[in-house]
Image 1 (spheres, rainbow, N blue to C red):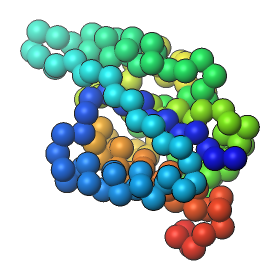
Image 2: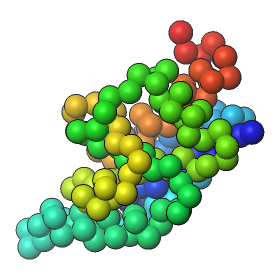
Image 3: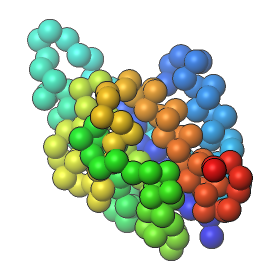
Length: 157
């Protein structure tokens, strides 16, 4: 059975230097998993709008878009670090029955506490903060790496 992987993200990837590598890893994933990407609108950050307001508005959009039956993995700087092998095992154990694996990528202000509360797991890509575009490219590569680990391919050593 193919894994059902969904990326739910705030904002679009606008620049080709992010979109091209993301699409390359998305293409590589397709023999191993169904990948869908859903984007919700970002809120403009202005001097009159505080980060908490931005996170709340974006968080409401993300929560509305989350599937009821999905295993939700929030990408959060303060989340648990996972090795590539541990990510592969998490994906196998939670997604092998066809349950959607939903990876949530926040916007510039981060993820609202309500989204983090809804998440089944919070994972960090790094203790550093990345742009949402960079996080999506890194996520796509790690998803591809994880499925090749599960398939016993030589991409990962």
